[in-house]
Image 1 (cartoon, one colour):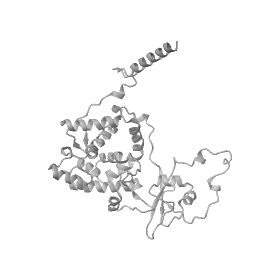
Image 2: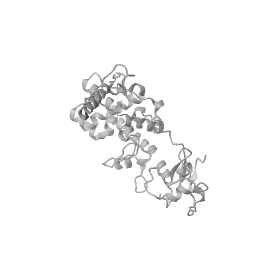
Image 3: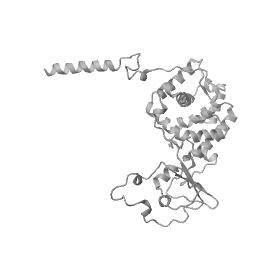
Image 4: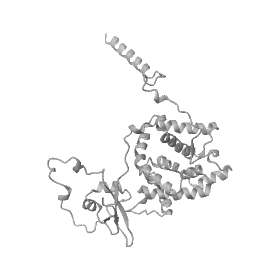
Length: 332
């Protein structure tokens, strides 16, 4: 009897699996229909206004690979949509201000996923700048401060690189490729192979895929619904609404300073990731700008007070005296 029941269960299970993976031309009947959908390649896709030679089977297949991989890595791509709402307005503003093509913003997506990551070789921040490159573009890097973690400053540094690379290559596609392998590396490959166009070069795997990954994200962000993403259904992250405090004297203890400013250490580090230690040494004639949120980021105890703490507040805490916490430039 038990064997008969087991056989019935197996048959039912196999039938369920068969039904699960049976394709249907009606997407309403099969929840997996979209998972196996292919996408038409638009011949109008370009990078910074420069056309992509899709007439070549090689170029078409390389782009196809990155497009499919990106479109169907849903968890990662949705996170990028969420972060883009917070950070793209700032990055786009700086690119416009610097007279650079907006498509360059997608370099930051594939470099870091719009987060302050650190690579195994030490490249840091949204734009994955190496220490020597950052210092070349006048960024401060020391034990207490690392400007590569400042999105605004690192974006300006990336813009300096883009301008220098364009002056050398006169082509934005080559500029993007050089961001991955360096200007010297790309120039060497061009001289060796006697071609001047990225699409004509035989390169290492990473750089060979690099521009096509950028193009894939551009395609999906430009027409998300076609690729199965509905921005209206994505709970994206809003830009930080902040004000700035000018600091022209040393802060010996940032934890104490944060409380003095009616904030906390976690929020100070979240809004100012370029602060790398619990202190900030300020030399004579130097100043820094520390950001604080106007709204949207609260202390947990303010949101959900416990019964024991319901009559208490951060302001009731006895704190060390901290002279001159700074001057707020926008206290509203």
